[in-house]
Length: 247
Image (cartoon, one colour):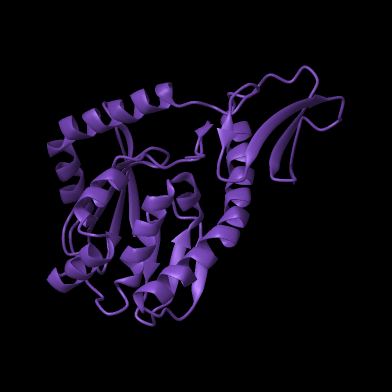
């Protein structure tokens, strides 16, 4: 059950009731805006009051998102994008369609109509990002599967099945059946951090939580550097935007 409210100082807020929620959860999402999840038995008015009590915190988060958007690089001619095997090229053509994207010999080619300069449009950026993510997924299949198998053999931690996902916030997961999912976004990270994420998921095969035994095993396989690597991983803001990811 959901309800939207409009608070002049912060705009639209979406309040969602969930049966499995035991507490209030307030988030500010870059695209979806202000989101509040409340237990099913709590009325919407209490949810609204909770938002009002936290309005200063919400304003800070909204301002952070605004600044991040202003600093965000966009895909346009002369902006670079490199990964292990991929590169990006913008090509002006006399085609009838404004934009066409294709992959040729590991080069992502964005063909744009002569005179087209509307690269700042959100739909244009999403079109380019979506295609690049598709290419990252292809690159991930070629790199991540062999590397996962290699580390699995090296550690003796045997997984069941592998799937490649596209989650930006969850780079890896290991379920109760020892199936491992890795995100294509890993291809934007250095090799040693990719290994760290893979090892993290492999360590969930014998330990399904983040308890002491899990961390002890992960630390063993990372030569005592698990905390250092985790801190380094958190310093990366992973998103599909221009840059050189060929570490």
